[in-house]
Length: 166
Ligand SMILES: CC(C)(COP(=O)(O)OP(=O)(O)OC[C@H]1O[C@@H](n2cnc3c(N)ncnc32)[C@H](O)[C@@H]1OP(=O)(O)O)[C@@H](O)C(=O)NCCC(=O)NCCS
Image 1 (tube, protein in one colour):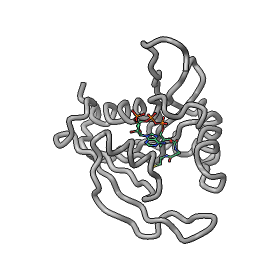
Image 2 (cartoon, rainbow, N blue to C red):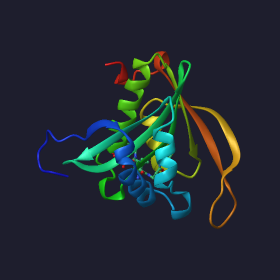
Image 3 (cartoon, rainbow, N blue to C red):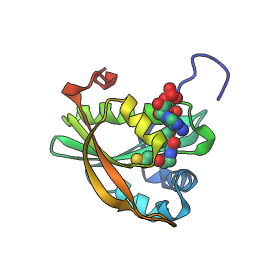
Image 4 (cartoon, rainbow, N blue to C red):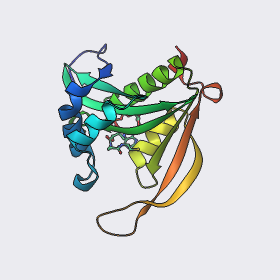
């Protein structure tokens, strides 16, 4: 992280030009088998109602989030931060920007799925006002051992005091 107390992640919209960086970040953040390829990321970025946000540190892509909106609900499809930039507020900035973008298009509820054994992600979402809305049994296959359950988490604007509203 650069020196200076005023440093904060820069978040900007992502597009097709960013898919190589997204694929690199996804592969570095997730297990190899769970990583999303550049073509599949491109397909998503070009899908109507899907938007991407990129977090940068000193113009270096450090993380991204992909979200899909439908009616008045949004879904976090994936979020990943390059391990070299972990614990620097990248994911928090991305989720906050995603919630703000969702609210801007009248989506006041945001859903996502997280593996029950993903403690960093669970801590992130809990700190941002997400609640448990459901569970999917044996949802995530693992290279070894049994599949892991998923929690369905929900953020609701009126129930949260997260500062996404402004
Ligand atoms: C989960 C992930 C996105 C967090 O990214 P990050 O940029 O390091 O997170 P931030 O620095 O914004 O952290 C925000 C908060 O999340 C929580 N958190 C993040 N990483 C954590 C960790 N390793 N252990 C405990 N809490 C953690 C903390 O509450 C943290 O706030 P704090 O630093 O003030 O304590 C990142 O670890 C990652 O890319 N993991 C692999 C991909 C993944 O699991 N994606 C989510 C799938 S649902």
